[in-house]
Amino acid sequence: MRISILLFGIAKDIIGSKNLEIEVNEECRVNDLKQEILNQYPGFENLKHLAIAVNNEYARGETSIKPSDEIALIPPVSGG
Amino acid sequence: MDNINFSKEELERYSRHLIIPEFNIEGQRKLKAAKVLVVGTGGLGSPLLLYLTAAGVGNIGILDFDRVDETNLQRQVLFTVDDVGRPKVEAAKERLEKLNPHVNFTTYDVQLTSANALEIIKDYDVVADGTDNFPTRYLVNDACVILGKPNVYASIFRFEGQVSVFNHQFKDGTFGPHYRDLFPTPPPPGLVPSCAEGGVIGVLPGIVGSLQANEVIKVISGVGEPLAGRLFLFDALTFETRTLKLHKDPNTPKIEKLIDYEQFCGIGGDAKEEKKVKEISVQELYDMQVKGEDYQLIDVREPYEYEIANLGGELIPLKMVTSNIDKISSSKKVVVHCRSGARSAQAIEALKRKYGFDNLYNLKGGILAWADEIDQEMAKY
Image 1 (cartoon, rainbow over the protein chains, first blue to last red):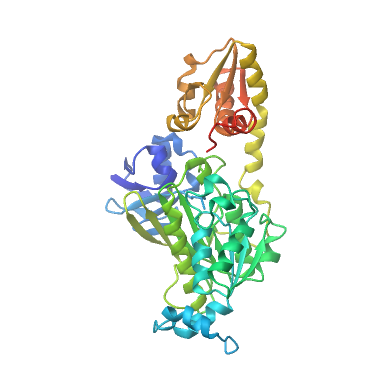
Image 2 (cartoon, rainbow over the protein chains, first blue to last red):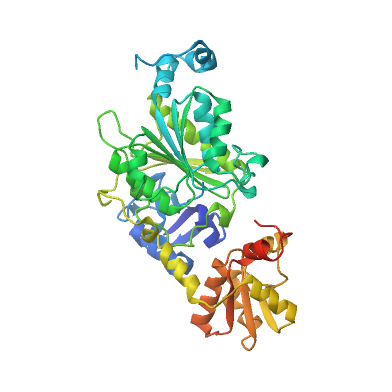
């Protein structure tokens, strides 16, 4: 299935766009999605530090993903 | 609260608060009784301090170890041209006392560390985190968790801001999620640029720091619903906002004591990488130029940085360095530079590791050192 992901902060820089479309297996959890992004975009080798939100809710690794879900990739920012 | 009284001047000053039905004099009493520590008097600290002072928070701690710099004035509206070079806490206190004489200020011209954080924070009711680096963010968070204090958090990057109220104590006595429930471990050094490295649009901290000040006032007064268990995201470029729900993560280890946060964030390791590469000082480079030595100068910054100031080097941005090795001499001495020396060290390290270059020298301190020691006319940014 095809998943569409919104990008924030430095994730936008790594991909060079504010959105990302990615093909994943039907049975997909947040951790699988992270792995798939990493396979396709090696620039994300430090992905474990990014938070993933599913439908505006912070999601842990075991959360399942459906194609209709809104996924957001949120890296930490430190500026003040 | 009964022992908190207001003078005629104060009642007049705060009248617009006093006539809000759900805020009224009770809310104002709570503000006057409160002690708030603002950590960092930068982009976020400026609106935070201005609004908390104007609103009549009775006791405000101001913590920063830095001095006011020219590059601060584009967004740090607390300071003026005359303040450049002064300790930030001193300039801030002077400005804020003029804004509201009914507030007590305590200044801390120190860096918050694992050694002093608990001692400083324990006297406050609320902490507002406006710092500019990951080690201090984890330190502020952990100290607040240990002491059971709410941490009103905001941070910014270029056009984007994040706000949340971490470790908020709800009426039933339980605590809301904190920073480590959201980001359990810090990013590796160098991945996420600070404002100094990545830039920030000047208005952004004004917007985000004002939201942060509003959350501080809500937490103190108990009015409204604080942004606890939620993370607010703002993109000034697209004017998109979203609020994510956060939860406490059962896997987050219990925080019992403060640790070495520089080490936790891998800062020590990064500096070592910089040291591993061969270095050359700006004075040595200048001497080479004067003597007319044969060498190649490579600038690994971005084209828009080159526009601000440059040493006439060949521009190959860091990301493109390893795909442009044909442009880099392997026979003569090559000096690589950037703004401060960090990116050029990364470039040299990668070229050495992947392609075996052994003739590369890092310009220590980069453009900034050149501007300080060789060319005072050059703009520092």
